[in-house]
Image 1 (tube, rainbow, N blue to C red):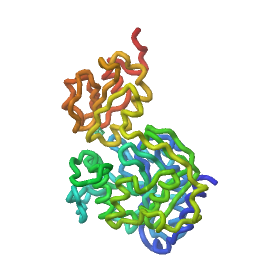
Image 2: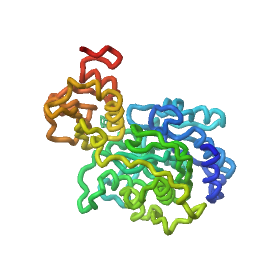
Image 3: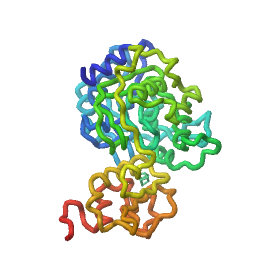
Image 4: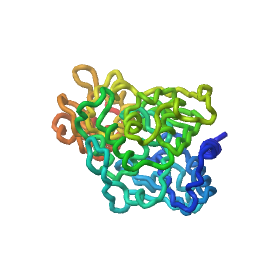
Length: 381
Ligand code: SF4
């Protein structure tokens, strides 16, 4: 079995008869420029399988659209991921969801946001299918079909979710981001959730973790239930994932595995435990301190990849405690002098240390800001 067969098998187990004659937007997780099989984006075969299944079910029109992380063009991401080839072969439209003016979407059950800016194209289809990769995520525990739906928010609206403050009376594990995601899907719920677990990401997800070949797929007309089952297959209790728990409480779908009928009924032989993300990003590096309040996934992933690639070449940037200090996002405080300042949101700290501007800056630019030279130039003695 490969990713195409896996997804077709999963979709064959659900009733797609209501698709007949309707327009469908596939919103795949293709948020970054990355090669196929890196686990960062969905497999192109998974997109192909969804297109094939929807057409066989009688969809009137199928398109594939994405609003990627800041700094990435959707069409370039589709090319890098191999999804553009699939679309060309099948004569399916590829949509840059950021191209058109957004529409306002009121959040009826809003706890912290009254309205959001939604990509216009996402609203214009009868049905949305959220096609996620099976991943862990440093901010939200996992990134599955509910989290992937956030990629239908327009441009910086996605960042705003990471910069929300305050969540009075919330449980200890709930961030404002979790509340905002659950409010959003309560107002704009994907009709179908599909998870590509051919190759996912574990640990420092969504993009700096390790590829994990799980050879699995999940599909459901209830995206919360799809995510709950995917969590189970990843060896994670879905009730520990705050945005899913809140979405279920708001009636978006069913999280309780006891109430979800699966094919096959016994999932235990299929479980492929994923390494969970560290409680805080800096815990992944014993010699690094990260101040990251209000940072979006783009800057956080950039910082993680920067550290993985270049940390050991930055000896001259360590502070008195022997550690590298990094700040990103707009909400950090108590940043010591000598801290490397990453991204425009953290610009208020620019006088505290080397500043790499950008949204997000690329790793080589952070290296240049910190050391005065690019990574491909020789290190000084
Ligand atoms: S500067 Fe970084 S944290 Fe701020 S919006 Fe850009 S990518 Fe996100």
